[in-house]
Length: 238
Image (cartoon, rainbow, N blue to C red; front, top):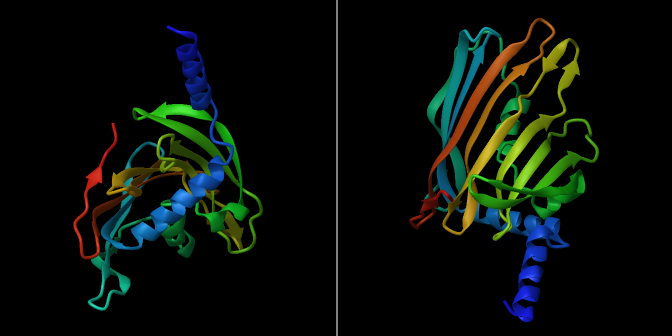
């Protein structure tokens, strides 16, 4: 191997070991493009929430399914394809839970979201066969009524697209004897045409309520992505 080849190899390895200096800004721009693209897609969102005692005995469940559709005039809207059905015994679903399903679990780290968070580069990791940069995301300040994300994001090195997040929604809420606790979750994305959209969020966590711990599982699936007026294709990376 000649000296030029060695220098080239060293430079390539160095590039792979360190992220771009403006990694977070590049990720945010990619996320903005993903958000704009996803707003042009129809899809189905199915939610299943299950509760268990600490011995693993099933107590109850909640199910719903919504279709994100467009009217003939091109207006984007949601409608239930499976009406909410709750058989939960201990869990009480709150407005914050549904806010999190809509905004936190499929988190998009767009430029307008950056001022809300401290974001640090944590390292790199190969996950699901994909080389990724790992970002640590922490809220800067949580004001009353705000719902924010706390956790990690995995960014594919080649495209700088977020392909996975893991963490939980904050803050927990304690007010007037009310306890509103939120589980840790993982959201997976897959490639839809040229962008990475959420395809599944899942959680299996024990919530430490004062009247006794409660195990909560939930599974959210996003299926049937198709661009309004066009066909689309979902690709799961190796």
